[in-house]
Length: 94
Image (cartoon, rainbow, N blue to C red; front, side, top):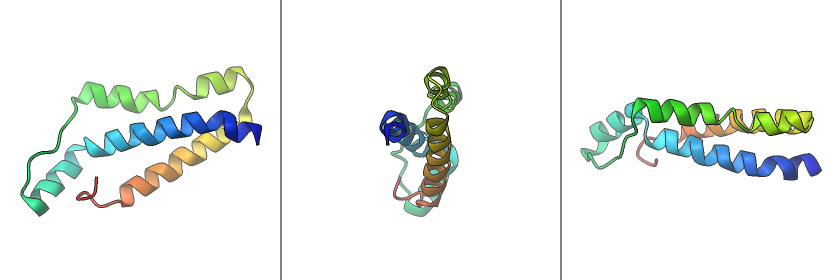
């Protein structure tokens, strides 16, 4: 249970970052514009998107330093599931 509590902030962090990346995705924006005709969605520069994507690897550093291998496995699994769920959400919702 302690591993879950220690890993939960990192999982919430990744949920927010993946949500921001999905919201600013150029392909999703293009699909949303085709479907709805609206052009109000915000985009991020490529460098900012890459920095956000690489920031998803940052929680592995403190978990590795503290020897929280179970937390690393939970974080990797949660990251995968969150990514799958976000890709299944239609572009009109995000």
